[in-house]
Length: 486
Image 1: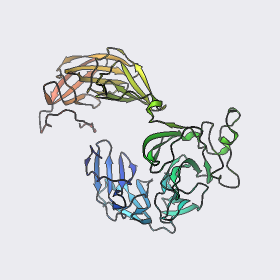
Image 2: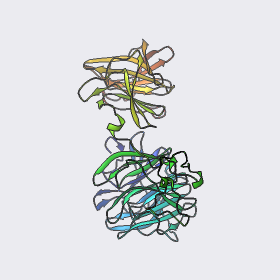
Image 3: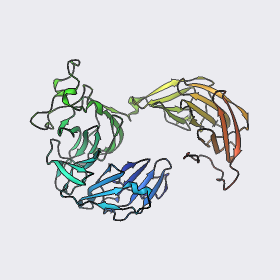
């Protein structure tokens, strides 16, 4: 949590979070193994990197390994968990909409007619007005029951006491369309899993996904999230702590009905059991291969393997931009202190997960480091300013078309900014703002407003911000633009 401001939580693991509008809500955690448990509630702003401790009444007891899911109407649901050697079976709801009102913040414990047994390490996932809870550990046995929480009636209902999926805990689950997708976990014999199972919430049927290529190692303590149509699995523990990232296309695993699946006739190379139908007599056996998806179903891709992705060489002092599902990396200095060309860019494609090198044309800037760049009102246009090379500092400006990768030198027609690097620069939709930085012999505290014409490739600047308590001289800082404030 280094680099953040506000009410920064103490170092901990096992806290859970849900997204709330533009912020993240977190609860609980543990600072030391089997002691120092927490029950504080926090909001985190990923834009300003600021934490806020929420002063709540009636907070649930401290815990880890609980389930936390978002509900409709800006609420979240907490169930179960572990504190020391005590596991819980309580249900709590927090109303996130009260954050914007004067009402006192409070957790509400929900008394239900029935509920899952006390457990920890289970998974929870939200779909429309329901939350689905699967598995966990009750202190003696790993579980494979499936429960549904109705956010309207505030009641739990057991869908199945024993599913066809092997009992497990510390796995993950997400919802995609009307499917619950379960990955990984571990059982009470400490056998870890890397299998995928889908549960059709409409017809109440489990199906195991067959994987035909490399896959994540069996693991626990990982995190899973759905972005567009892909399931991403991040990190975890397979005997060692992991930092890898994998993805799989869920649109090729989950179909509304089995009859809508792609047929095998156009894919003669596939084994017949890859698309085998679940048994009509009930849920598919976990050992019976069945995959309600296309011939590409069950194809994992690893995103964090540099040898596979041809990642660019390591560097510092570079600039980046995101445009049209791609990340552009510009310039900088590598680990051998070699200054890198501005005439070729490293580009990462978010859709394919691959790096490529692309050549530029036009008025290519000289090699440099520690410059800043911002995208303009036309999102395909990038403005880059300043930087330095060894002991030579710059104050020149360039426009880059992220479509054609053509550079254009920008002429300064008035109010020149002194040469600098390590400054900050923002764009508010009308003007650019350049603050502070350093040159070979000076450190600055000045603020400049820059007017830029992309049509004529000209810029002019004026120094502003002389009124009030101006920040002290600095370089290597960061800035963000929130509404019309820098």
